[in-house]
Image (cartoon, rainbow, N blue to C red; front, side, top):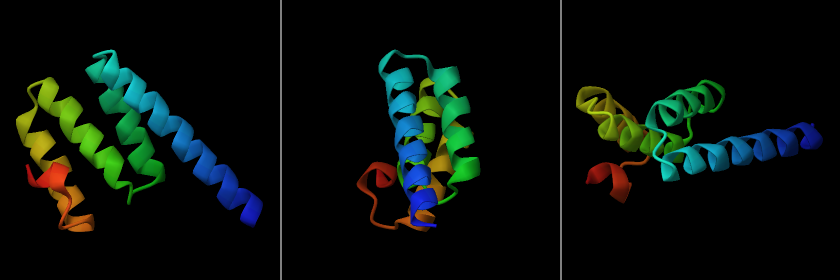
Length: 84
């Protein structure tokens, strides 16, 4: 089982890096899709909710962005990114 947990962590890290790269490149639609895929696999991934909120904001999807940030605050009430 530890091997599998290691694989999961590596997969999560790889996907997160990819999502960050999409954001850096301004590829917001793709960033939204990838962050949503990450959250399907890892529903407690606070950083993915924050990235999703940022990408949705960039696309002008403010209601959806707010939902993403509210989910962050559910999981981490003191999260400074989501509080902003």
